[in-house]
Image (cartoon, rainbow, N blue to C red; front, side, top):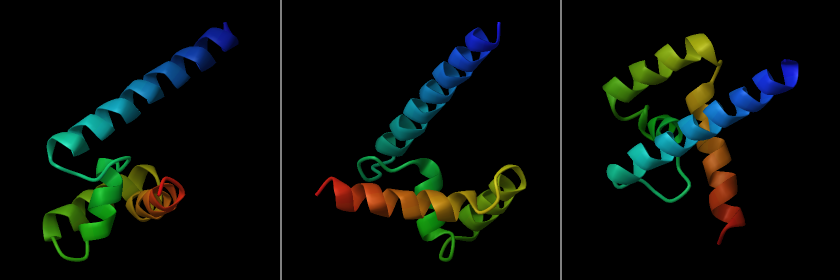
Length: 79
């Protein structure tokens, strides 16, 4: 039963990640960038994204900032 749950959780997280990338692509985001990474990069300039990141921080501390940092690493690795 535990193996099924772990596999299902991984499957669902993969789908959520793919949807996240798709939404970012639809809004002309950079390749391999998630919505959270995009929000993290512009949260200092756009008040709405600042508050969206603050909301995400309730669930995952410094989520947007960490996502933006991961995106930079991925971007440099894929050059």
